[in-house]
Length: 299
Image (tube, rainbow, N blue to C red):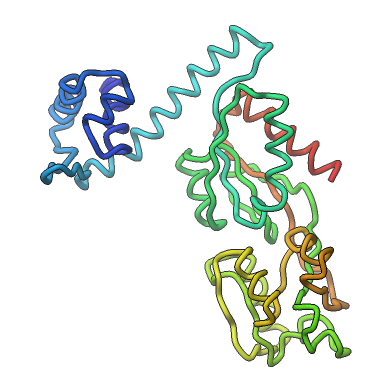
């Protein structure tokens, strides 16, 4: 099984076209067709269904694609390592970062800005998702390094470093009736419209657990898989929410949101960086992790 055949196969899957793949790879189209035929003959399977002008992966092709992407990524890492050893002064290559939206919006831009100023030859790719999504991406090597902004997470096959404790606040529109009451803490949510992330989010699971323990039942729960949308609904007066302070600092400073009192134990939310235990940390990845530590340390 040749690397060039796998690279051609992966590019066809990505572009959905033999001709587009040929253009991207700098091959003549018959060469691309030959690569696929040789790969299919070697594996004794069909990789694509050709339905009119559409190219669709077969079930066998979908299975092979996962392996092909990992093989190609490892191959690129090996080439990158050799290139770096030839020239230790310039760090180049590519990093794929996984993050949930809360972290991506508030902390990641600053980290990326400083990193790219120091290492302009490094390309960065971002993938967003839930903690579960990001964990699976770390497992299948489609993400190099990841960030979690939630309760502390532990996985036996990951190296996870807690960088910062993140204060959590309850916020509402500045004219919300709750601002003129004496209640505080989780009991604020009793008989209120609570706007939160979806149930598959570990941050949401923490909120649900707190509500159960305090035996507090909101009047309604509105689920939205977007921090920005949650804030906009709260600003409009549709309900209240509980979020890491870093994600609502701007809105509070502009008097778009108001913080409600919280007199209970601080909620266990942390910024964490993670990578797979078996992951080869290339110079770009190591530099990025170090830049992350510096940016978090200076705030």
